[in-house]
Image (cartoon, rainbow, N blue to C red):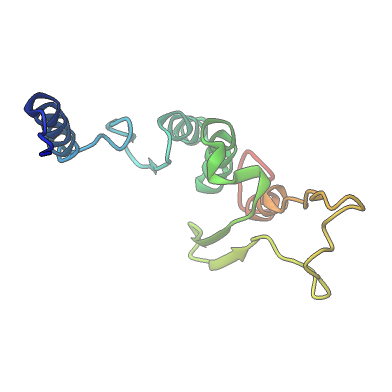
Length: 150
């Protein structure tokens, strides 16, 4: 006995597979497109437009780049929480208006005697670590910012 394939279901499935392949070839939008924030003597770049606007408003209110960085970073903690922000750390390379060049490293660090299970409670659940972001912001702004942490 010879088995026959019905052409209609086969053609329909082939068409759907071809349609899926063709539509996946189109360029995908990666996120909202925006022009950015423009000012005469400054620039603020952020992963979210709202955070860039906040950083720019700090500059327009008389703050400097350190103030704008801290404001933008805190705004990103709300507008783009998956970037880490308040729950993480960071690093910065800077040059002040006076020409001082420096860097700050306030990334997360484990103690030297850290062990694999040291942040687990008696039930094996994770005990949250401490953020270093706020301390890094204070270090960045201390003596450098005009508005925040000056």
